[in-house]
Each structure stands twice: as C-alpha cells, then as structure tokens.
Length: 126
Image 1 (cartoon, rainbow, N blue to C red):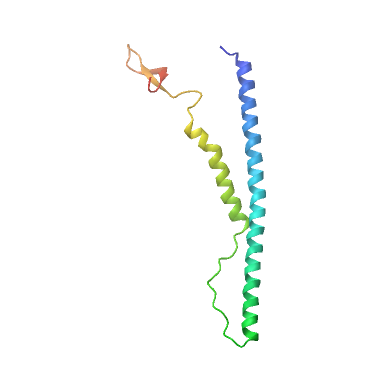
Image 2 (image 1 turned 90 degrees about the horizontal axis):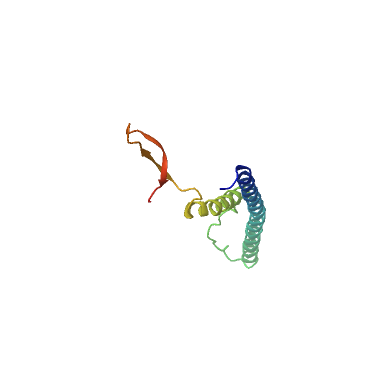
C-alpha cells in the first residue's frame, strides 16, 4: 500500500503537470488565433486590391467591370480563439474518455441481513 502522504504528492504533481500543459496549449491556441486572423485579413486585403486593379484596368479600356463572386469577410480573432480553444479542450478531454480510469467504477452490494446497499465490493464488469 502507498502511504497517504506519498499518494497526495503524486496526485499534486500529476495535477501540476496537467495544469501547465493546459496553460501552454491554451496560450498556443490564442497565439495561433492571432496569427490566423492576421493571415485571413491580409489575404482578404490582397484579394480586394486585386479586384480593384482589375476594375481599374477594365475602366481604362472602356470595358464593363468584371463581375466577381461574393467574398466572405475575414474571420475575426474571436472566431479563431473559440475554434482553437475547442480543439485544445477536445484534445485534453479525449484521452480521459477513451482510456480506462485509474479507479474503476464500482457498484454497491446488498447486505444479507437488511437487503440495503452498503459499501462497494468490486468494479463493474467483474
């Protein structure tokens, strides 16, 4: 058996590791959101400039202006923060949902005298 004090130290160090990992991933997600929003904005500005140049050239040649398909406005930083934060949360939660727990689920047992449930006997499925 592991002494209680040692168990608390292990639990605290596991919690610390997971907390630091979560903070690093969230920081990366927010930084990545800033970069993605700037790239999206510069792409939209370049596309608008290219379209304006084509319209100007058509006006110089006395031709009708070209018809372009509609452009979606660039996504904001908030959009990318939400998206990347959901990704981080999913990556942190998916191992917890797929791997067996360290402490298995247990079901209560019935006592022979009263028929009431009291205590836990063994993990489910055993």
